[in-house]
Length: 402
Image (cartoon, rainbow, N blue to C red; front, side, top):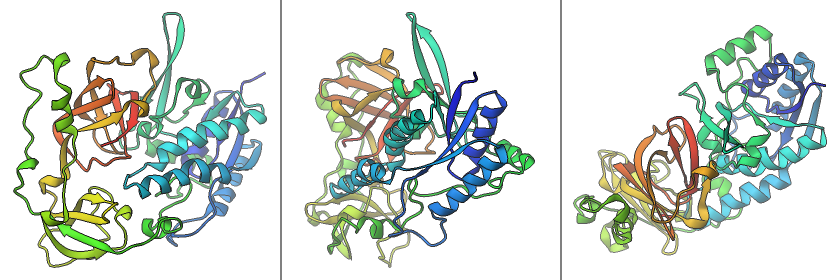
């Protein structure tokens, strides 16, 4: 009997072609559509809702002649992804719901439903690859970047573990997006020219403040502009002069400490509706004029309800040399490559989707991981996930504490 695989048909072209690839390889393919969200609060009208996605998914399953099923995981999604989002924003952090959705829903709750259908494997339309190797007679699964560098989605899967990867399949990881479109067109799939989804995973493109106001109260506060020239903007090479394995924790802490602003550090130029609605590096939503260049958020204080901004993309307040991840937030995909306290290692790191990989040195200490970049990085925000790579393999990740 052929191995049974359940494909998460989303109503998009990627999962549609993923199902076809698996069928061509001889798998017994089943299509399963997840309903994860149906609230339209804050949703921009140009986006399709879940009913449209369901219709397209059904059309693809019929065209490919595979069984099709439906499951409602909206309760799980709200509890494990959306509630997490609200809690993080309330604390002034910037969560990535797509990373959480993959860890908590697509490769957890969805996998449970797939097993009920007899599925031995779960497949998605992610642009990434999996490779299994033997280390000391133990099977180890490697998560690799997709061949298409423009669409690589390995970052979104940086929180998966070995158990989840055991049954995961990524059928289009060796294809480029244009190749996927061509295949879908030749097959006559209804999703061939359908636009890619945008915004929050399974929610869509939203006006974030409106969406967050479902649970977070709007409250007026000051927007304070910080001018350039503050001494704390410089980045002394305080790790130099020490052997790499003997850099003092104090030096690492200094390089990863966010800039500290106070209302009197600058001057008030406007008001906002809640500091928890803003994130580091944000450009839109301040409604303040009279500047030659755009204003960017360089800091927030949810306790004092103050948003700090700086003028221009070159404002030094946007850049930081390092970041810190608490010990309990560090996640290793490759358990055999876990670092020990006192150890350091050079990796390539990214802190957001589509960001080019950045050279950095990771220092593992008792309290957590210090990541010091070769070059200052723009828009480091607490709550974001930092993922570290060796060549094209994702080794581990963690939520940024500061």
